[in-house]
Length: 153
Figure 1 (cartoon, rainbow, N blue to C red):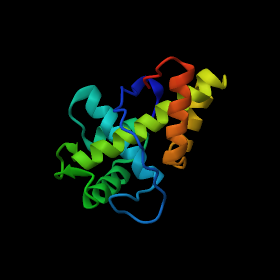
Figure 2 (cartoon, rainbow, N blue to C red):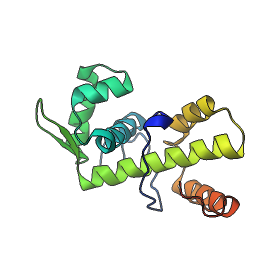
Figure 3 (cartoon, rainbow, N blue to C red):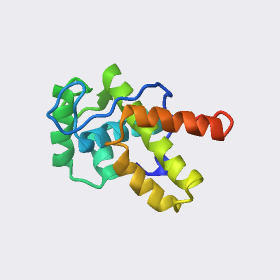
Figure 4 (cartoon, one colour):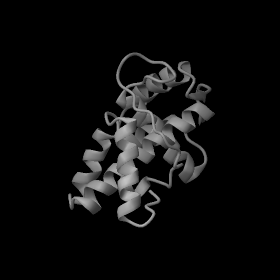
């Protein structure tokens, strides 16, 4: 998710980490987490999200978005009527906010603490956000909070 599009996320801790082990309420792929994160940010920006909006934001085809939306709907993360808007369920919204929070925290650490160039920090955060443990995210958050006098994310 590009930094310019990232809106403030909920600061809910701890954050769950998920891996590719099948689709369920706790386990979804990194790609599906990216869809949730994108839907969350698009909703914050415009209030209404359609398949076309998601496809444009992610640079993928509408059929790809429809497959992902169907999988996320079946897993209980969102609601979608054919040709209608895509709406995150409370569970989907929570999960999306957690992913966005992890992304922003990692990007901030890489860029502001380690001095990684912004573009690279953004790209790396996009990859790392899906594999880092909740415990590591909590320690990173605690570290930044101490170092930056109340880091807010």
